[in-house]
Length: 331
Ligand SMILES: NC(=O)c1ccc[n+]([C@@H]2O[C@H](COP(=O)([O-])OP(=O)(O)OC[C@H]3O[C@@H](n4cnc5c(N)ncnc54)[C@H](OP(=O)(O)O)[C@@H]3O)[C@@H](O)[C@H]2O)c1
View (cartoon, rainbow, N blue to C red):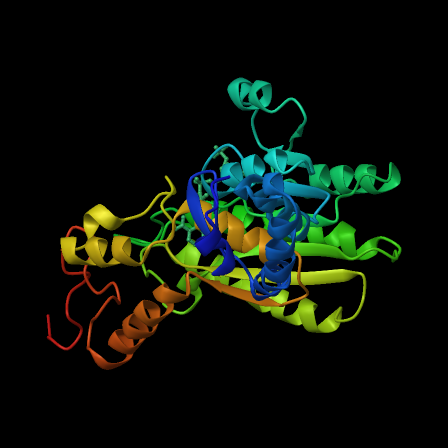
């Protein structure tokens, strides 16, 4: 970890080559170390080296950032899930990864991770997994329900099978975990249940109706549960995620180039997203909006939908065809 003193005392560290803005708490801790470091420097020349100071700071930040000792993550074969797996595994946490298929290269790369092959759409399999982990005392303290898909299901016509697939994955794929979790006897350890929702809650893409409605329903469920279980061992949290650079299916090529350009401009990096989600999972906060800079974009889109007739309302197909005959014209 390359930390120079100025960055250190500005509360900024660099972790694996990427800048991390330290949280208020760590900035305070760093501040508290400033007089200590100058005292040490005056005592022994060896201590004057940045190495020791860096080591102390690393230890403090490391302890603070990696308090999650165990984590379960769904959908770790790619994108955000995979980046979360890498982050937690590297930090020494016990990781349980839940994927619908086995990926030999991933499993051999992370021998310390326990890989479970479960399709999150199967309520029975998820139930068995959660109950089995609870019975053996291995149910992690952080459960990140990340697996999700996106499809075009509402273009030329409404495609029920595609819509159902998205709802089954993005909504039921999360609710299937919550059922058994809420049935477990309460314990004296906080268990954080983190759903990866989306800013598309605010502005739905009309052509991906399953995605839009699955995330809206997911957000509504987690709002209810976060209030209902407030102060208990079950901490329900959700991340309202804006665009992140992953391989998730998007319809960007079907929209005007400027929309893609603006989206890219407001997109978050995988590294930043992982750090934000892992920090959030250490708190009891109900909601994280990330990256915040994308939020005004969604507000502008929402205003556009309200105020500009036809704006992003799917009145034409993705290929630009008129949807149906104009009902105001007598045929
Ligand atoms: N990227 C963004 O811009 C963005 C924005 C807002 C919210 N999100 C949300 O973030 C989450 C992760 O998205 P991502 O961008 O990282 O997408 P991604 O790269 O496509 O990863 C999705 C992961 O979910 C897994 N998955 C899909 N269906 C599954 C199932 N039935 N059972 C188990 N695992 C399943 C996939 O596994 P396979 O490899 O087997 O398909 C993959 O590992 C999603 O919930 C998404 O809605 C993403």
